[in-house]
Length: 228
Image 1 (cartoon, rainbow, N blue to C red):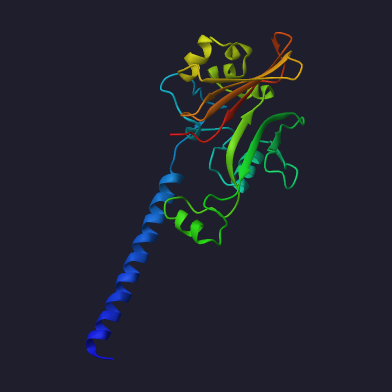
Image 2 (image 1 turned 90 degrees about the vertical axis):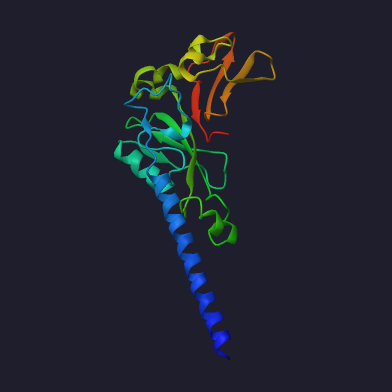
């Protein structure tokens, strides 16, 4: 091997190490940015009304979208709540969060790591701009009316019957708009499932209407990833 080949090989090795180092620094930087995200705790702070936030900027009992499943469980346990695992093998069922009396106050849905399986190349490259995740992460949080006594300020009104009216000024005041209304009538025609969606903010409000009245306990407020 001549001296030119040796210098070229050495130069290539240095370049590879520099690129690898830069990629590692970028991964750490973006991961730290995600971890430093400050969120509003809805059980202690009112987040409704201007300036309007999105679902990634708030948390419930210390749990927010994007948190790992183990971190979410620990936060809820510190708040005196319990995590009831969903049925195995059913990705549509959320974990039920119960208070000390056994009441289901909210639900938390988790999904596999973004980018596919952790051993795949797709997941490796995904980690360059997303924080490393080796477990399931929170992708939806749903509140039930039993949670109302624990919510702060006007947050409680997000589970009120008045927010479900088609022309509700309360919905516009709290969330900044009417939302996208979706209605699904029941087979008998006397039951209607209504959802108001706020895709840009990552909010959904749902309720069941029967006999011209909202069914008690059917209204829920859901946090999901915003759609830009």
